[in-house]
Structure formats: structure tokens, C-alpha cells
Image 1: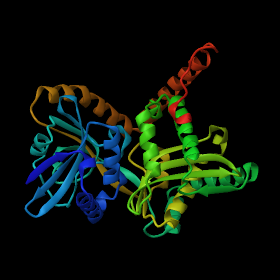
Image 2: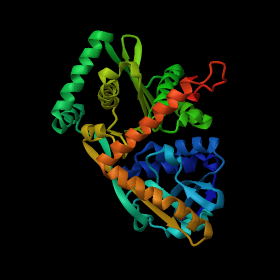
Image 3: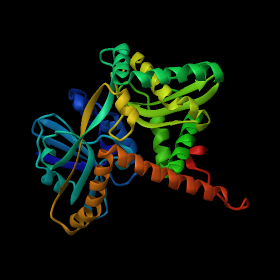
Image 4: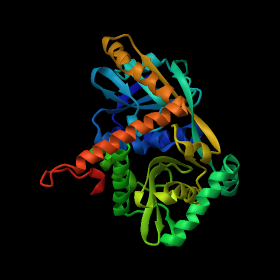
Amino acid sequence: MNIQVVRPRELGDSERARWRELQKADRSLDNPFLSVEFAVAMDRLRDYVRVAVISDSGGIRGFFPYERHSFGIGKPLGGFLTTCHGLIAAPDLKLDAKALLRACRLSVFDFDHLVAGQPTFAEYESDVRPAPVMDFTSGFEAWIEQVKANSPKNLKTVRYKERKMGREQGELRLEWASPDPEVLRTLLAWKSDQYQRTGRVDRFAQPWIVELTDMMHAENSSDFAGVLTMLYAGDVPVAGHFGLRTATTLVGWFPAYDTEYARYSPGIVHHLQMAEAAANAGLHMVDMGKGGKEYKDWLKSGVLYVAEGRVSRPSASAAVHWMGRTPFNKARTIVMDRPSLYKAADRVLKGFGRVRTSMQRQEPSNAVTQEPTGAR
């Protein structure tokens, strides 16, 4: 087996076509974060993006996109931004994982959203987690019946708020696949505000992430596209989402809403309408990603599985990396496993966000402040 490491931008048309062919042949790889278009976009913005092209006498057998950081530390493509990673290859391809790392000049590869069960990495999986999905393969009506079965009370309450918002704020309409960059700016401003209110790191304070989002929004092919949806009450935007899709799967990425309309639960209202629009557009699934949000359990009609784990070769940098990461990963798993701990952690972060917001408001009026990147 031959392994050649290149930049994604260096892949030729035939190699990109082979990548798409392998991805389409395996349903577990039907995720836009595994698409060649995403790898090429990341390569334009980050110098440490690489892809291992795996071949034998019969031709290309697979692709392994990754990030190579200092001291040979390997990370999944997109890192904390993405919800799926792994080998793009035939389901039965099994490589020596440590030999793959050696060819990629990596001392360690740490993963937490790997496609579960890939033969190359299966023995290194330390935990496997469900990722809830909205499955429309039996039609939208079958999905909404499953949502009703999951929680009749929740569905009734959201439908009531949906009607109430329409009466009080103007007729509701959902725009699917909006091409308008100003609509995207609105959504990202809401998302930045949400990160700050809830004590999280504002991803859109990093210019390269804003640029990546803009690049993805401009993508629009049959196999890969950025999809911006926005829910309006009258002519006023109230909730939206930006995600990526393949030909059949939309992945949840950046949902947000205007807090002025929080009493109507616009985020969930938007998700219900977005689901119907996705099904009408011919998509089979919305992948909501793993995580501790209660609404995902309510809206799900199936699950996919992603794995956490670590592959390393003997080295000082791998040992240091293990000491730094393992306690954090275990603590995170414990919190995500227990709803009471997750809610407590969420309350602490929101409290921190309120304090941070209050301090920002108390700054002298003549102080120079930096506008959030996503609020341009």
C-alpha cells in the first residue's frame, strides 16, 4: 500500500472524482464534513491541512484528511468546528493505523467524532456515542409522527407558539437556501451574541472562521452546498440556521435566533419548518450531531454513531499530549453523560456570560471596543 501526503488543493480532477465516488458508495460517509470540497476550503485558510492519498496497484483506495500541528500532533480536519471525520475509503479497507501516522508524520491522532467502526481505527475507539438525526426516508409526515410519539406535549406547545407568533408578529415564512450574504451576517451576529451570553468562546471572533463560513455559503453544487435558512415573521427575521449538505444529508452547524422573540421558542419553530423544507428539497436526513441538547432527543427519528479515541506512536510529544488531553476528555464525557451535570455546567457558563456582558456594558463610553466579527 502506497501513502502519499499532499495538500488538498493539489488533488487533480480524477482524484477529486474518486473521493466523491468512495464517499457516495458508503452511506456512513454521507456527511459534508467528509467531502473533498470542505477539505479544499480548509486548505485555503489553514497551512497545516493535509490529505493522505492511499493507493495500491489497482488505484486509489482511500483518502485521510487531517491537520498536522506542531510536534506532529494530528487533529481531525476542522477540529472543534466539525461533527464528523474519518477515512474516506471502501468500508473494508484496513490499514495499520500507526503506519498511517508514520506516513503522515504524526506522533498522535486524537479523535472525538470519527465514523464509528472504521476498521483502521476501531481498536483505538475508547467510546462510541449516538448522534441524533431527523430521518425523512419514509417522508416528512412519518417523521413528524415520530416527533409526536417522542413527546406529544412538546409538539403541541411548539405548534401553539408557532401560531401565536404568526398572529402577533406577522405571517411566518421560511426561506430555504438564501443566497443573501446580509442574511448570513444577521445569523452570525445572533450566534456571536449567543456564545457571549452563554459563556462560550465566540468562534466568529476568529476571522478565518467567518471567511470559511462565507466560502461555504458560496458553494452550491448537486453534491455539496452551504444551506442558509431563515424564518421570518412578516418581513422580520427571527431564527435561522447555516449548515452544509451533500446530495442527501444536511448537517446542523450554526443555529441561532433573535432573543427579542424568545417567548415564542423561534429556534424550535424554525427547526420544524426547516425539516419540512429539507424533506421537500429531496434530502433524506438532517444530522444534528452528538451533544447534550434535549431538543435533539425530541426531534430525532434515528441515530448515527461517532467514536472517540486516540492513536499514538511512542514519542515525547505524544506523552505530553496524552497528559494534557485525557483528563479533559474524561471530564467532558462524564458531564455529557449526566443531564444534571450538563445543566449545572450550562448554568455556570451562562452565569459567566452574564457577568462578562455586564462588565462590557460598564466600560467607559469613550473606550475603544471591537465589534464582534459576525456582526458586520
